[in-house]
Length: 268
Image (cartoon, rainbow, N blue to C red):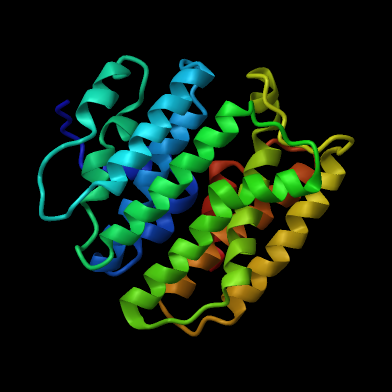
């Protein structure tokens, strides 16, 4: 598997929300957060694929988790190639280059990213194996923690590693959950078209919006406690865009336009 595009091109292609705040980070931190984002995006695109059946997703995600658990920074052996090459005709570039993304961060923090990605891959395999059944509020909390709340915890660890920034971990979970809940609202029709419903039984859009705002309140507390730092610079951009997207959905739009995104970022 040979690809020519550098990580920043892949990042720009795969994330409108996170490309801007990651690009503004100091170089060492930029590499670290890019590594974390691309690793998570790699497995997320497997979970969301409409080309893979659930059994294949479960098998591949669990294999990725085990490969990450066996990884060593000083060992160039590629444990990923065989599994990923088998599905190479069905997977996007960001997923096929997972090994590369996992080695992008400095050695002193990379294993924490491997651990988080391995754990998330296992959780995604669980949800794929159970056909993403979200019946209750507790199920929704479990899912949003599985795929996003845990990312909030990883970010807290990255800030602490970089410059000693201390954060509230409960609020970190809310930060991740809130961003994921916005995605659930924004992608509602697309998810339903592939037979997945992330709304608990009996919930409508208004109830999901209330859930989302409750989680974003936790996100507010998370960043309000941050002093001027790269962590604050990073976190306030996706949070601002999350609120903007939520307001757009509440007014009947599907999402923010690119012009609206740039306008919100410029105000920061």
